[in-house]
Amino acid sequence: MAVISTIGNYFPEIIFETFEPEFDADLCGDIDYLGWVGKNAFGIQIKPVTAKANFGNYPPTERMKNSFNDFTEKYGGKVFIVFSIDDEIKNIEVIEEIRSEIKRLLK
Image (cartoon, rainbow, N blue to C red; front, side, top):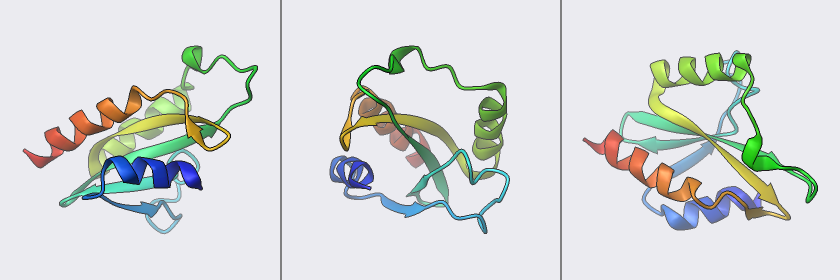
């Protein structure tokens, strides 16, 4: 997906890999990519949206919140939802949030 390539362009020092079921089958449906920062990782979930969708008010479900919390316990980093339309990041502020998380994980 072109969106993860775009995210990778912002963070060339980070190794991104597809989150596969063998990492954790319970989390696989909610995490698309891992971004490795040393021994820790943050998660990326890419949500394609239509032009009609109001992604600013997208509330994660309780199941997703629990899944994201489980991810943080296991990998140390947060999970970020990236909204895309036509392979472009629409919630571009997420880049700064990811940057802050990388700095936190490097400490």
